[in-house]
Length: 352
Ligand code: GLY
Picture: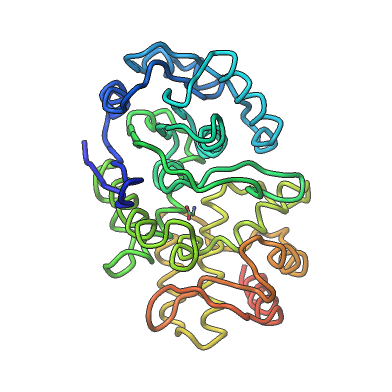
């Protein structure tokens, strides 16, 4: 098992990555003072696959099932989960275990942040995407009809167990989605960006991404600045996903697949703004393709609609804000003109 520390002082914790890492749960809970029971929040498919029974918590466990759809990450679901905690008699000294993908850790983490005004939780992320992103860093929350993740809290887990054995049954599209986030980290690490990460054992791959994320979160826990670089490629990605959610015809991209397109878009936008050259754009394409992803704008994407949706992204302030590559690496850039964004999307549209 590889251990990656997240250095946040009193709120710091350890991410354990490796095959069978979930079996460390009893030790982790044993190290938390006063825990008498645990609520395992998970989804029906994961419970049916036997993962809940296989979790040895070392204390009595209450299993709380939540839905599988993005619409299930709601205030109504939060209320349901907290009511289950109340009926089970969970005290503020007990612990929540989030077993699932980002939806589960966002919802269960937010329940932990608010039930009894805050209790401890442990993430056991079950997808590659959640192991390299949502499971680490303490962003929790739920969606509103008006937008994703609009209600939430920064609330750090007490520990994270990234068990790579859980990935062995992951469908290929879910692997691809995780690799989209990995491609992002290729541009946030210290070395030259490439896809050589994939040559390493899976535990190493996950641990290296977690280490990059941990360093950024350690510097800026509440996203007052630097943490925004973790959204590299995400502004267009969120718009592409919103198109899918609103029932338009945009092909149903997984999150990481949308990020892959967003990374190449961000590079093309950076070139249009004179921040980087064509060689660097080509590098983005090579890295994204190296991670096995399609860098092209989906055929049915509508540039005008996408610009409108990007303006509504919650990370945007008054003008459009992007995370862009440049001479000093990837950084936050405010005040990008919508016209440049539209022109870049049209350029991508023409190239596909
Ligand atoms: N997923 C981006 C972040 O955690 O900041």
